Amino acid sequence: MVCASQTRVFLREFAPFFFGCEHGVFCVLGFYIDDSADQKRKTVFSVAGFVGEGDQWFEAERSWNARLEREGLDYFRTYDCLALENHFQEKLVDRHGLTTARVIADAVLRDLKALVAACPLYAYCFGVLMDDYRLVASEPDGKIVLNEDPYIFAHHLLIGLVLDDANKFSRREIVAFIYDENSKAKLLQDSWVGFKEQNPNWANSAGTLAPLDDKKHAPIQVADLIANNTTRFFLEFPNDPEAAKAKLKGWLKGNLQRVVYADARWLREVVAGNVERFKALGANAGMIKMPNT
Image 1 (cartoon, rainbow, N blue to C red):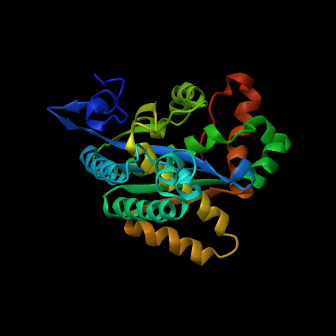
Image 2: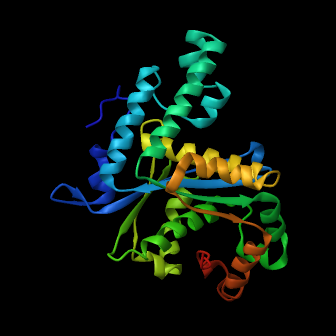
């Protein structure tokens, strides 16, 4: 049982409920997801995360929390670290002053990125170019298939990328998907059955989908770190593609698995593959069938 005063919940305490286990050995992979965007989602909306085995996540979580504890931090959010706001203001700025807080925050960010890069966790990144999304969603067929908000669509696509790779393993792997608990969590949760029904090629490898509080669960904070960097990657890419790629690849070394973005051409392929079914079934059309990636 978790005491009311406890600020963190460790993966070992709840993993059997999400992952399932046999003789104490977890038998599925865990993929932790978070989303990010520039201010007001003007340019890009990103969803990203890391996948790994249970023991790998336990070790990453242990090291992550130990680094935060050294600075008296209860949890980590990338935006708060960069802007020195909210929790970082309370714990660092108010205690040490702005100049020292900036030095400490930069060191924490640098150390956490190095920690993640050294772990056998593998990153998947997906970005929606918002101008392209709004354009296609405003077209006659796009209005039928796409919602105004890409939140569900982007999460489904990222999950599909992971399941697509899981299906290529020589032995069957089940992937549990854990995402940040927020105001839209119920919408994503309610979409899970329909997503699997519309994408049976992925359903066999799709395990649990569940939301968790990022303040208490370090793996969600790890996902926040890659989501924030994914947004920055897509913001920088148009101006200097090689520099943007080098920065992302340089941080994650060989652990960067997939980076995909939804531009107008790709989105129109999605719409074309779904529009007739949506016209025929209307409100009963269910989830979007995802394209081959």
